[in-house]
Length: 96
Image 1 (cartoon, helix red, strand yellow):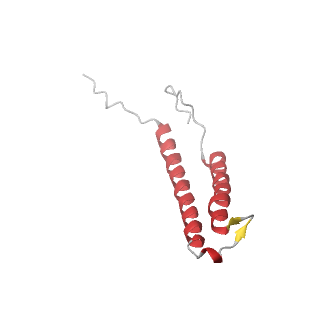
Image 2 (tube, one colour):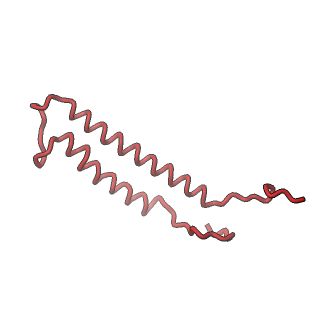
Image 3 (cartoon, rainbow, N blue to C red):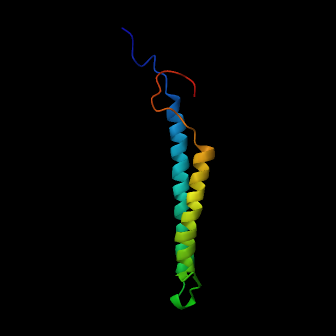
């Protein structure tokens, strides 16, 4: 009787998906550090010492507005340069 596990070959898409998932988690951690650093770094001062940009407190502007734009740019760059287009209906071919 043939063991079904002896002929097992790992699908190479899993390695690609795991790498891309780690990149996504890394970008999320960078986003949190950016947000936390500006929000609590600049926002922990007394309110009367706040500086304002476009009518918003500087801590909010840098953490939420600029941070969102930067992270969107990083995600677009990562998808275009760091991610690989793989077929989802892979049927045995090893063309990856």
